Length: 188
Image (cartoon, rainbow, N blue to C red; front, top):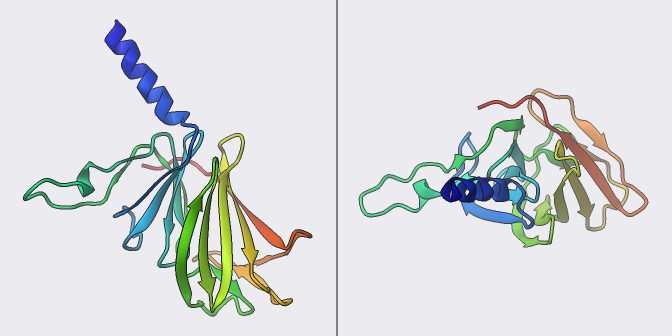
């Protein structure tokens, strides 16, 4: 009985973790090389693709099993295994765009910073620095992305995903704009 309780406690602890986890690794579902697996507190996880400059998909539950990318001698490296169902997907080249929503920009990844309950990615879009802070919605039903652009100079900003019309982004009084990403039905 004690052993069973111990394993139940570990499984629940994995879902209710209190800090951000991050792995730069080989991710499934056509993510670019060296994408990031990010686990936010409360069991909200996502893949950030530094090559395309965007969130590729999100899943809930456990984080990732990294056994397949930590091989012993003679093992084949395969993408990590997600420990929960995928609840959001997007595709397309460089979804954050300035001025022309049809023109994919040049994205140059600069780094990231971990915070208590969020992660901030830094990259440039056509040479302008963008800081993107990603957090989980308090109820765990989506992700909130806050973008801060260096010297936006009145330019128009867009979010363009494959299969969707480009969405115009409006700056708030703080000089940032926010994009809410609600989760849909879980898929394997």
